[in-house]
Length: 134
Image 1: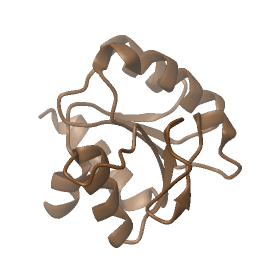
Image 2: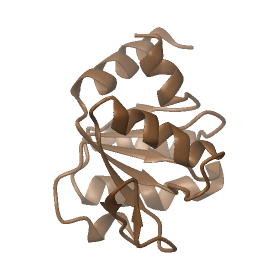
Image 3: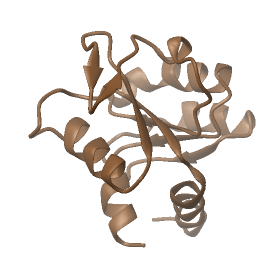
């Protein structure tokens, strides 16, 4: 992992409080469920973003980032790499401070777009693992 990404990971973990999770799953065995559940237990507010859910982890689910009625610090993506660009664009539009692409997810052009807009970006890293390592 690049040193710069290591610094960004530390900053995001320490500063983010409200996390919009795109692709939050209702299936407990999937990372899209147990990672946000862990983060919620650590004190982060989790906002589910999934058009197929009405509620998850005790929070109202939203069909898209633009529908979230409160400020979001971090957009955590559980999406295939090729599906990342529109979510990065939406993250910029809603004023998120950072975008985190989970382990196995990376999109350099979208990451560059987010950085150019002033967002912190983490790619190809598991937030649960990184949080536990702090």
